[in-house]
Length: 113
Image 1 (cartoon, rainbow, N blue to C red):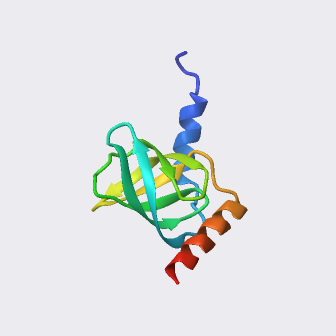
Image 2: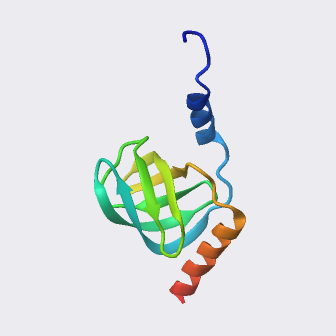
């Protein structure tokens, strides 16, 4: 319908500009699944409740949907919000709760030691 606000598109647009919260450095490898490139491994560089930064071997355009498989966690769906120089930022479709975020951060730090 012409003239009506597409609420889903508006929410998706606004969600990108909401502050991402504190980022935590991580050191783990994740499995990424996306329609354009299939399945591949990536380094999880940092993580926040709303998204993550990945180091990848492939370039992916903004808005590419993907699913992250982080060891010992649930699957996280999201999409690329920026991409440059073999790194990209993703925004999760649903934010991590504080308990999930804490478990993952602690797990990755323990693996470093």
